[in-house]
Image 1: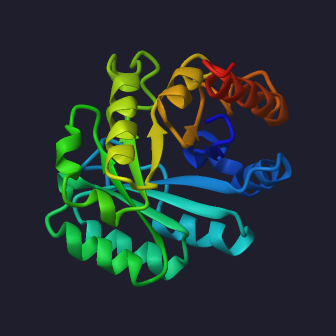
Image 2 (image 1 turned 180 degrees about the vertical axis):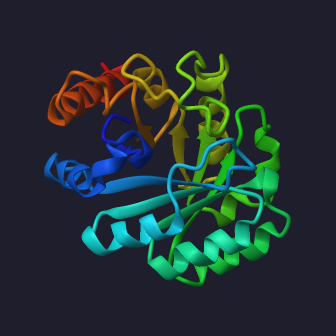
Length: 234
């Protein structure tokens, strides 16, 4: 169990948005290979940190993997834009997806990984038919776009939902990865990893903790991951 590879995906909207190039260089220097990029339309979620052109410029300056999370009503438009830019994974929300199979096929035929994203209270049964078709399920553990509300804590059933999804994936003999997003903090990482999380979207409560260097924070995150992987391992 403890040889599972856990991906740390720094959330770019938690980096220094005025100095993105410098932030991206720091992330790469720290030995991380994935960038988590939120594309938010301001309607599905009350926030809009990055525009399409910013992502396009980022693509020109780095070869890091782009893990894109679309929080929007017009999924097809944003999926197509991200495919044009050249990203490695695109997750979209099932709550706003009308033609879900169509989006999955569109992403897959471009050789990009597909993620199905769920809001905190959306039940796992909505994955019933699509689970075998997706590479990743992205579980939001706080309400989308509210990351700037420091008072908002992770939903109380976060670990249970990750664990339930992990069981579901095993039961169906799949190797779908579980991505968690929202207050993925040094305190919550061990429990989330133990429950089955594979990709951790790291923001202001872990990798971008103030008053520490990125390297120091990365070491703390890795310690938290090790704690989760080694729990129960004799």
